[in-house]
Image (cartoon, rainbow, N blue to C red; front, side, top):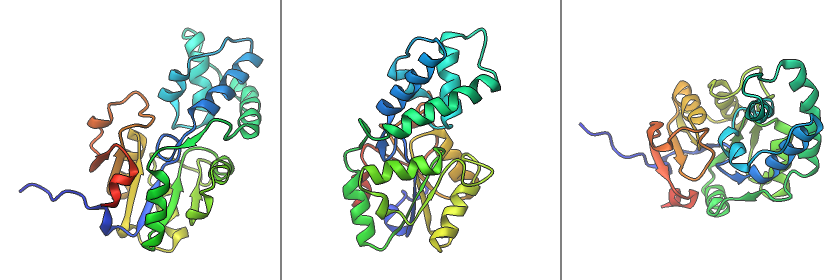
Length: 226
């Protein structure tokens, strides 16, 4: 028997990834990465590298930038430790200079709020930075919880950030839906026993979004409102 198509309307808790799902943050992350690389005497990288590498946190992004220039000598922990504050300071100071909500995001959030759907942002970005992006773009008040990569001892694809979001929203996981853009989101949702929608426009970490096994794919979040 063929499984019935996923109907997003039956869920009253929506857990959203941030970068690549709600917000196109790559331009500002790219500038912060180039700034950090320059401080280490390394040349800039293409924004495409950032778009492939977003999703596992700032240290991972820095490591990808260094590996692009030095594939034979990956960054060691002390180098990343030194560059991380440089990256973070620049990014926090320019957190939404060029970042924008994707088309369809605002109508989706507003429609869900009108239906009394509880919303959380579950991201591997540091929580205070995620909060800052959402505030700068005028949508922080739509979310009852923001779970960052440093909120808990674990981060996605571990399922615990999704569970913690539900706890903070005061609603059971049985009514939750994950919305993301990458294999990290799909694996976290599967581990938590939560259905998952993937957008086709995001930061897929080099994986084909059509092959991730999401329950539903959409080209815009407002497609989930029907």
